[in-house]
Length: 323
Image (cartoon, rainbow, N blue to C red; front, side, top):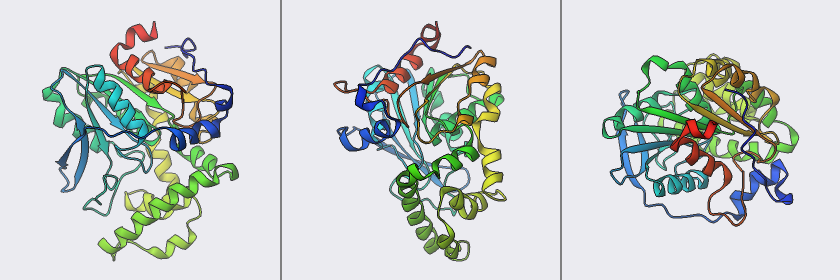
């Protein structure tokens, strides 16, 4: 499938800045109350995941995957859920382990390549639906695209389409990019919540967590080196990045899939824009938007942002969207 350029995002002049478009939704977008119904799914390994649902007995279901340290209550998830629900979808919004407001039971939490819970959620709900659509944002997009490419033989045939937004397709290069000086406040925000969770895990598992490493943790790469990697079975941060990044799996994707990333995204390095992969795979479409920031794509005067509208359009009918 060629790189798609016939779907343009055109923001007002003041949002033609990657940083401003990234920050704008967090400061100025109204929050909304969603009529979520929470379900706790007991996982095969003795843990649990909480999913927040909008269920109206429709024939099709959309599963939404949030970004790093987000949740089903992130604004971009709630607005996407509201839009899809209004267009005839039941919606299931994942909360990764440790992200639902209650810490999970095991020392492990979640990471960019952990696809087991997405697969488990699909299997849990699929018998009730004729069609399943998937959408993932940032880290959630990496999980989603990795899942579609690494597990082709195991995928439910009911999965008809998928969309990834602002996906860090190359995790190692992304960790280097977010450590740049102009991304300091983003990285610090992520580290603050991640460090709180590690301190809580220390209380739960005092013999398995070494807090001495927190004094050495100055970047997300450091956090992955000392915590994410070792706690989830990787040798170190680089081993984690090389095994978990979705870019290596894009060529395997058979499900109609759309990836949208802004070229001014302050989080994404050149390596995370899969131009070549999209050109080689007829099932993978890529929109390299000139503007949009990181999970931004803000639209003034519109209830739903541009990428949310693109998700709804693509999940509704991927073939006509591409045409």
